Amino acid sequence: MNWITVCGGGNGAHALIGTLLLQDETTHIRLYLPLEEERSRFADAISSYSKFEVQLAGEVHSVVSNRIHVTGDPEEAARSSIIIMVVPAFAHGAILSQLAPYLTKENTIAALPARSGLEYQAQDILGKVSQDGCVVVGFQTLPWACRTGEFGHSVTIHGTKKRVGAACLPAKEIGEKAKVFSTLLGMDVIPYRSMLELSLANTGQLIHPGIMYSVFRNRRTEIFPSEDEVPFFYASVDDKAAEFLSRMSDEVLTIKKVVEERLAGFKMPGVVHVSQWVNQAYGDKILDISSLATQFQTNRGYQTFKVPMKKSSGGYQIDVNTRYLTEDIPFGLLVTKGIASVVGVETPMIDEVITNTSAWIGKEYLIDGRLIGRDVMTTRAPQRYTIDSLEELIR
Ligand code: NAD
Image 1 (cartoon, rainbow, N blue to C red):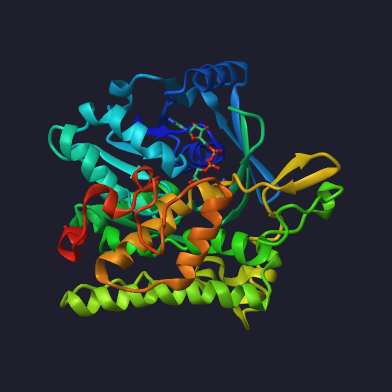
Image 2: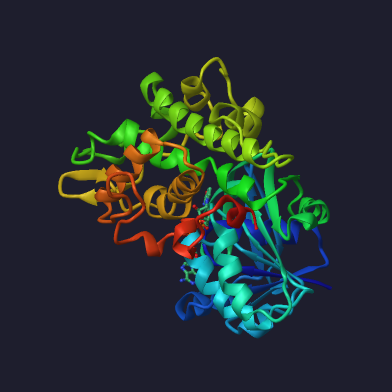
């Protein structure tokens, strides 16, 4: 038997559980759910249904659900050599802290996806507690667009990326870990050379807050009478919004250039323009690749997604309390801003997005473009971990 621990019980965890079980019939899952209510709901679902189902491209694939073993015990969770956290970045800290006392160099703990700045947080938590250094793997993105069907029983995978990037702490382990995870996930895992590369290559930090701001900033109070009238998210990117995203991406490329110039031999080939990334990730799912706007508008992997919404009197309204802001700003764009500050790169477009969208969600990160807002300590900006030189960023 091949035991793998999955931490998380949301959409991504359902997709991962299904994928791992379908990939290899000797795999068993330790499903670590520290939240009690979620743990008992999952355990109930497993005992009610004998199958766990994955709907993929119109076909239903099923596996026996008694290969999933639910636990709330961190020591038991740490018994698997491979542990994968599939949770929003704001939950990484809690899970790392719970598992840290039981992790050894036999463990590999992965974050799928990592978002940005995982390296500083993992170092901070595991460095203090874990006995003898496990390997940390961060993935650039979740490989699937997916939604839980029936909790604990079924999941629909709407789209699968062609490949996914990953980096390691310590960096030298990535070659071997990329092979291991390619086999587990059944897709190409592209090795990145450093966690810094991974943090800067996080395109969700540009795409999600960038679209929320550039496309929807003047529509936040609008009432959409029915769900059908709520606008699409990615498909709403027009030329103006694409220009915005492109400029944010150019700022990240400037950070990359400055870092590479200052560190002889240090390269971050995975940090590419958002347009190149969309093409690489979605390939022939895009019907018209002629511009960044059409790459979003005609991307079949993106078509069904609406702007996050909430019910309001008279219909629906845009919901600003969405992961696109509550996760992608503190665990994404703000990390990039922090890295830019360390290396002395101006990021006016990114600053504009952070300053405005953080106000929508009642957070204060930047004051006059500086990382001194009251909520910086709840983010993974390197400054939160008192990292303020390029040498420390790399270390
Ligand atoms: P989700 O909201 O469905 O899952 C959240 C889960 O996180 C919860 O069910 C719980 O198990 C866990 N969790 C939350 N807070 C916790 C805490 N304090 N302690 C322990 N566990 C906690 O989210 P998801 O859709 O599975 O997304 C997971 C990650 O993948 C996020 O970073 C998301 O942005 C990213 N992502 C998701 C999709 C998708 O299609 N679902 C696509 C791209 C990226």
